[in-house]
Amino acid sequence: MNLVDKKENCSGCTACRHICPTGSIAMVADDRGFMYPRVEASSCTGCGACLRVCPLKKDTLRRHTPLPEQRIYALKHKAEAKRLSSTSGGAFTAISDYFLGRGGVVYGAAFDSNFKVSHLRCTNPKDCDRLKGSKYVQSDLADIFPLVKEDLERDTEVMFSGTPCQVAGLKGYLGTEHKGLFCCDLVCHGVPSPSLFRKYLLYLKEKDTAEVIGVEFRNKSRGWRNFSFAVQTQKGKTVVPFNDDPYCYLFSINIMLRPACYSCKFSNMSRVSDITMGDFWGGEISLHEFMDDKGVSLVLVNTAKGRAVFDSIRGVVDVKESSSMDCLQPNLIKPTPKSPHTDKFWEDYAVKGFNYVISRYTLKNPLVRIDQALRLWVGRAWFFPYLKRAKSILAGGWS
Image 1 (cartoon, rainbow, N blue to C red):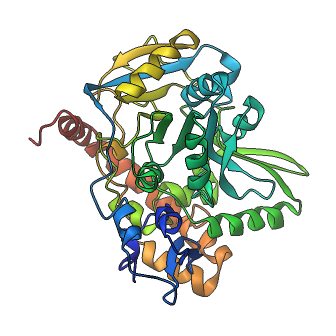
Image 2: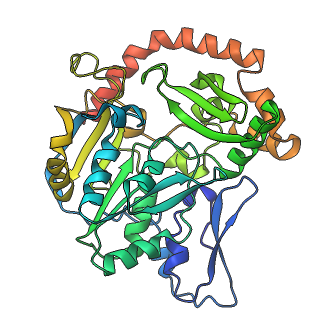
């Protein structure tokens, strides 16, 4: 059975692997480092269970009870230390603390000791702190879905956080709605290759001739709006503007994402989770007094279950109700567009290696710097018409 006719049709969620009754499916990395299912023909019975759970082969497995209308909020954690250590306003921390306080468990993406990004099961605040912060690389779900199922069967409350496709994959694997499951997804830009990130860490080690001991994609030392990239090696800590870091720049120009990300069916306001979290960009006018440079979270409350949890955390957060008109983000409208240079980038990466693509496709190349400056200058003239059209789309119109 061929599960993946096109790589654009697989998000790597692992639901097919875990639902297979004969254990005939393994997740195997391709030449770009993305994981895809491989079926062992000799043991496959052709039952089709794998096809039935795939979140990209059917409607997005929405089994929740929707609210009469989605609610949108700007949120700031009242504990400044927790907010400053978060990517945006600390929404994840407020929700995860709530579940830990009820004796529940929290699942989310974390760096391990070798900076591999994997989903982790957490039962205490110290472990849960590892889940905070952005990780711009696809996480390894390994055997997380069966662990979630075991927790739910023991009547343990579960908070699962991940990308929308991971949430949809988990719901497909579970098959039925579970009262004890609470899902949070992200406003996702797309996921880069774990293999590419490993090569990048080696690049940093060679550059500084020292081991990397810390990575922070969204450092706030220069503010939340002008977030920076920080890397800690045995020789010290370096903080640079986000796009000045080669890996971050490649992420920002959409050149190294998983193929499915460019046609993501979850990039819209109809969400698969109970609560959606992200950065609250765009509130400087309507919520001027509420906004600051320490971080503000965007929270979309999507279900009745999400409403109940949101109401329960109000004592530890400050919130302002908002609307889709004020929280504009491209990935709430459409998928991240594929860079016109993506195919050539991967071809050069395969033939010439990581150091070459760093020198060719990032700001280390003077021609790229000139191109970026021109795009910024030309883009200003088109920004406001685009903004107006995007807000019209969010409001439900196409004029």
